[in-house]
Image 1: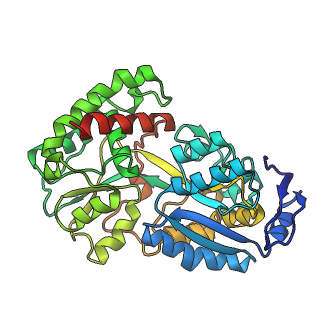
Image 2: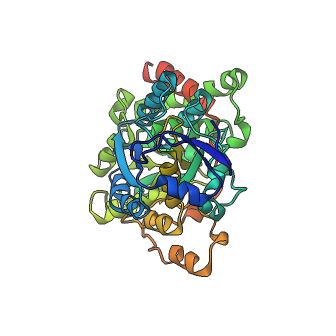
Image 3: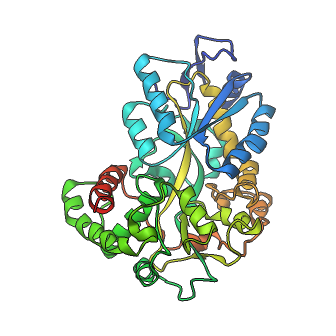
Length: 400
């Protein structure tokens, strides 16, 4: 079922007290249908700031619009996707999942399998505050968005180092790996398929290929067989210089961050660099923590809110997605002590007063502005690349 400016929805949530299909010819009708609905947002539960933002800020704002928002913390996004797909198979129309914080191959897999409602985002009034030509909002790891998810925030893959211990600061990824070899045991990365470890491996693929321009974004077996031998040779050669001699790897980004916080390694990496400010201020990360910007840039992407095709509270979910795109919520989410996420809004579309709210956000002694972080940003490879790269890493590097 596809939603457009005139959309037919199965308004069958118990909260709305209706089971017949309703045709929404205006946003006002969506808002009216959403009144009293409960919307369940499934999202990664390991991000303490993200969970706090949703429960302390977004939930309250949704309540003011007559929608009860419930955050459902999960260990990994596939937990939500698998639930939706099982409901699709069972013909469920009032499922347990309404919205999902999603991007990447989880989005692509779900889209192919019919997990997401599509074509609905044009109805959201606050979509007018985004740039319709922004490539990060049009494609998600090579999969056209097609109105199947609403943008939430932008991310930039970032290396982080302790300037008190790293004095010969690398300026390229190749130099960073050389630094790791010259300083055995002081660098590592999470084991793919961890999201952060996986993108690190793809960054190395770009590096050994002479830049992202030399790696086709669309996957093919021919390109994989041609380009990845140099990748795995590089990572296999690097392994003995890693933390614990590369015999074991952090299982996720949280474990790597703990190693950095405890001084066991001198470098960590993240898709959410804005959170570094609070980590340093709270004494969790070393006082010398700094962002490492690379001459060739790093991968950038966007995160989205996907609307489950099996949701019984689609109108309420649309209201929450629109609310999450509001200037007020985007500014609140960008506050470093709230969540520190980069906005998806196009500041040129905003009024002077609205732009001033973003300009008034505190600057960080640790994290450069998004414009600096995203300079020379690298595109994400298509989602079809991710699993083959991760599986070959486990076979050729981990099992060396």
